[in-house]
Image 1 (cartoon, rainbow, N blue to C red):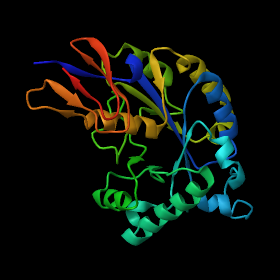
Image 2 (spheres, rainbow, N blue to C red; image 1 turned 90 degrees about the vertical axis):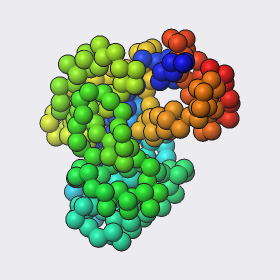
Image 3 (cartoon, rainbow, N blue to C red; image 1 turned 45 degrees about the horizontal axis):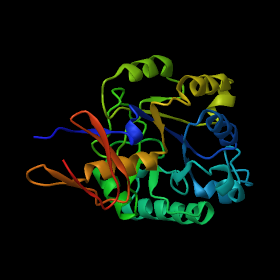
Length: 271
């Protein structure tokens, strides 16, 4: 029997992704840091504050609607609902409307389908909420629950993180690099407004220097991770395990008896 083992693109030994909520003006500085170090971010935005950002009821200073496409280019814009409610305390119809409205506005600004999301206020692993989110077109959803073993989620609709921006990412990163897990993923999340609030932008500079521009690491947005892992999991293998078909639109890499191989969309390979 052929032994087929997951690999990140081009044989990378691990992947790094990050996620940032609320879309405040401090995302500008954060993105500048990421771009210097080759790190990717997913930015979860409430479209309601983009529209009402000049009102006195708005809590923070948010990015403007007109800068969304330019500012987040090369990264990912994702759903955070229109007005940031507690979804698990909301009726189904409100959950659906919050998500669809946020998608509608953000897609008009970013210029592409927006199918990823972060739960406002985190929230529990609620099957009712997940069912409504799927109906609204969401493919993955990030809570604030932690999983420090660098495993990929069994369910992308409740995708735990590795640590918050205030966590001990230095020791976790060292542990991550030493992990033999073929599917290992490091996932950092937070809010860019916490850096000026806590006067510690140096933490993100440190993170960039520690984790960025490593040849052995794949830097990807949340959606890129979702697309790649989903493509791997959906590969079609023959009953006798002697051939493999890639029915997805994503190039997938794997190791066969230790040798690195790839399978492009629509391809059938002999094992």
